[in-house]
Image (cartoon, rainbow, N blue to C red; front, side, top):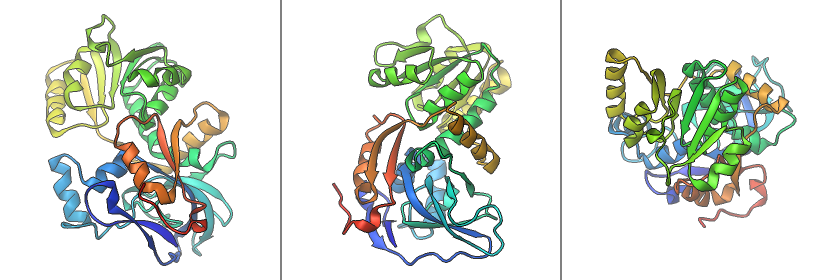
Length: 338
């Protein structure tokens, strides 16, 4: 089968085409013919190993100190058709259209993926008929993370939520989930994304290049910060006295600051990703089927242009998600790096 190998830590050119043996399902495995995958910020961070020091060293020790060994194929979101199942699998059957994530095992940049239904990392659900494979794949991590943060935000109808960096994969879902539960949403991002954020339901939009949201008189019940770094004090200023600050990309410094703020102030600081659960992905699937939420896709690339897709992801200008079409890879004679 065609796949994209992760050959070293570094630039997108570390991704190379390869032919790999077809995976053989064991008794609790599901073999999926992949139709679509994505490029996420997490894929790019993993590929380059541009991670905070407290994460980078343990990750290198796990994956391979000099170059990737334990994980050879990236890609944490996928959608496709069940090709075959092991003898002890009852959740799915051949021919089912599915979407989900292999978790930290990764592997979606390949024509076929084997997932273990006994692994705590596997999240897999039936694909809603109303959406494409690309839309389904791109709803997995963004949808699950947005759901996690909105639950931690504990918003009531009428509460005010600010999302800093709202135009990415998590932020676009968070807007829709917050509106679904009756919150008033202010979305902060670059000017080119503001119309899209309004279309998703944002009540107010802020161009961060022209306006500092923390300098307004508005105070929020919760702030979801997708940016991190130096935005910590600004987000804290924007909160009400008993507000909740949710850090999607916390640095070690901000995690420590957050603990102190939670201990000695009225504001709560909440950081880190949630545990991915199958029942939550099934909930996202129902919302997608109903049309309550939708997936925003900026660009689509075929698998042989994965290097170009990673380059674009690293510009930081993407709106929503980047989808990768894997289904037609067998028809291509080779892979391109441009």
